[in-house]
Image 1 (cartoon, one colour):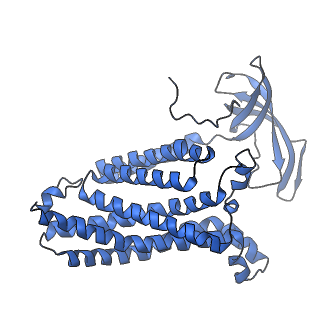
Image 2 (image 1 turned 90 degrees about the vertical axis):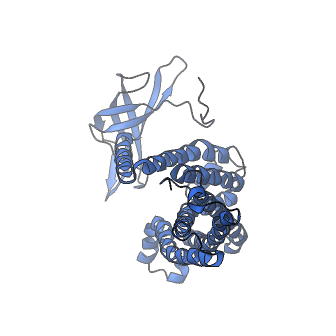
Image 3 (image 1 turned 90 degrees about the horizontal axis):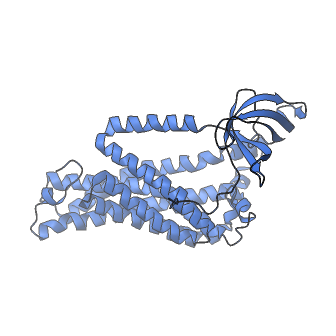
Amino acid sequence: MPDLFASPFEDSTERPRGIVVSVDDARVLQSGFIKTGTQNMRVKITTGSHAGDEVEAWNLLRGNLELDKFFVVGDDIILALNIDDEGRISSAQASDYFRTHIELGLFLVFAILLTIFAGWTGLRALLSFIFAILLIWKVLIPSYLLGWDPILISLALVSLITIVTLSLVTGLSRVTLVATLGTMGGVLVTCLLAYTLFPMFKLTGAVMPWAETVLYSGFDTLNLNHLFIAAVFIGASGAVLDLAMDISTAMYELVIHNPEIGFSKLVKSGFSVGKAMTSTLVTTLLMAYISSEIGLIMAFMSKGISPISIINTNFLAAEIFRTIVGSLGLILVAPLTALLGGVIYTQNKKSGLAGPIVLQTQTGK
């Protein structure tokens, strides 16, 4: 049965797992902590069609600590095999360490703790988490490479992830409706702000790591500027969703405990919750964005470059843009969600329906 989510960009190189049996470092040159040259090694293949075979593999050291790997005997690694027309291995390169078992182990711990702490709600949150990963990996990224507009496809998929996540966690309720509309409104506002303000910063999407590499790999129709804008509101969407959900839930609880509360008081309460949450989430967003550029900031400061020059470099200006635009979206989503909650939560009283019955959440109230 064909894989409905198979990527059209998967190469034909076989990438099995292997164990390093022996290593020859005679062609490796070391200068300080930098290693260059080539490691020659013998590797026993443990998976794939050539499992059990031993091959001579090589590992190129470029003197780049960010990319280089230095293997030793016993390492569990991934190979890149070139296979000839007769199915024989023509060459083998050591690609990277095999880390999947550690990654899956950590994910399993995360899943168990989440389920223990939050019960069925945690399990549903875990399902939404997995759904989001699959959607990003199998739909969003391939869509970019196929030449679809990054802004449009990202808006569509963020909306879908929002709807599925909130529906799984809180069920089909007015809490979900308010949070979903608030999140989608906040993401759309963030997108519009990013699209409008981006030209003012005189940046290009090539400021993203590896983006230019993709462009030169045959995907020259990729709109890097739109890709950068999409990355801005995708990065802020998690915090926007969190804020909208907190405001929606708090307003719901107010209606449950005080069914006679009026529109203005309910909206004012939603504003109060939004103020407190926005203050902390803005800092959270700042820390998340700036942490990826700590090494760059240290490099500039170590050379005595002035702060004004640092914040005007392309990379730091891009992070500042992400942080400020994402924070603006957070600030605006709070009043938007509060107003939506005020309308939707007080609407049931006009129709004569009991609030606690209609406003059903995962607790079964």
